[in-house]
Image (cartoon, rainbow, N blue to C red; front, top):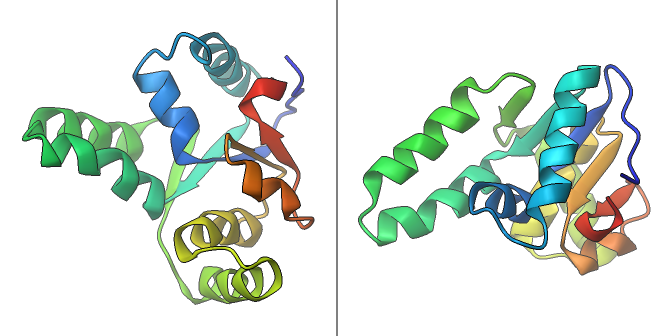
Length: 144
């Protein structure tokens, strides 16, 4: 695994890694399992934004699968070592900076703005556009 977490490290996790983990993606599940094992073993902290929750629950609700949406809600509400962060003015200021500097769309800027405002040590994603953001250490899932 290319990422060596230490106790207290903060990792912002984008939506797609969670989807790969929950849906047992054949290419990415082993890396995601190893990542979460390392998070719990070294007592690192995973954070994500409310955007992740919105993105991950929309399809189940659209398909009428309210039990799956509820399962996701419970996961993001009660999991150890995971914090779901709401949007606030501090994050909004970071979002404005990211949109102005890198031309990011609002959802991506909210994700990355949340990581910046929360002091994330790493950002785990599969979003190639995010690598342009110099303010954060962006880790692609394939690098794990």
